[in-house]
Image 1 (cartoon, helix red, strand yellow):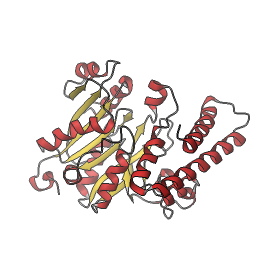
Image 2 (cartoon, helix red, strand yellow):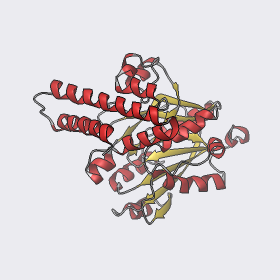
Image 3 (cartoon, one colour):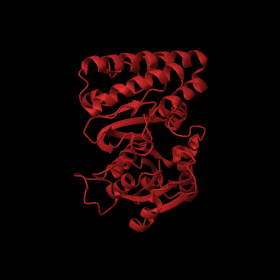
Image 4 (tube, one colour):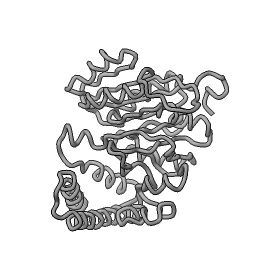
Length: 331
């Protein structure tokens, strides 16, 4: 139990946002959680005091100056270079743990818009359920579709097989999958116990962080949330996917808008995690399942998408082929 339940004071949440050359997205993110944003959701909510940290990871687009000028109440930390997502989060996490003011810590991606008091509601969800260590809301894309890769079971040969061959869609609550099918799960249950949660909008008890430690900085970007989930799960902590609140995630914004390339980093980090935690055999099986799954998707999208009109459709086909070749070759 965190301090607010026993003291009667308002629940306190520390929101940590790591930013790298995402000025426009960062501004929208900060506005969405600002007290005067005008987008306060309905219903009774617990009183939640937010303290916002922005760790600028060596941006060159003026992100840090924008935060200092437009959001003076934010605790801005300027890093001279991009040290990676977990390392940047850990800078703020160390402050939160040392100061011991926050009951809940919320990791929030700079390309997430959390309107309707989503962050406060997520913190309130944990406050009402002392048995739950961490929670994630539904992650939806700007067009309203559910994002892939929100949470799920930890990567094993079985959970990757279930995901890449679509069994998670046929049996969404019975086939343990690396990624859940958010749409299918949210239609069936109000919450789901999982083994890892995406760091896009992750609320976790400060006491849980004190127990399991900081993010693993060996993963520069991606898979640090898998590792955190593994440590929480092994410690007997409950992790919940809660579609009762949604946030908008401009998923892949960094790769599409800044780097202008297809993102294979998540696969590289997934395979790195798989080899480190599951061994060579499951690593090879996982890569094989991924390659087969992406090849099937590329073929299906090519056939069903003929005559390949539409930029988004062509990009999906290119993306599936790129993921197939990376899974097969590693380059």
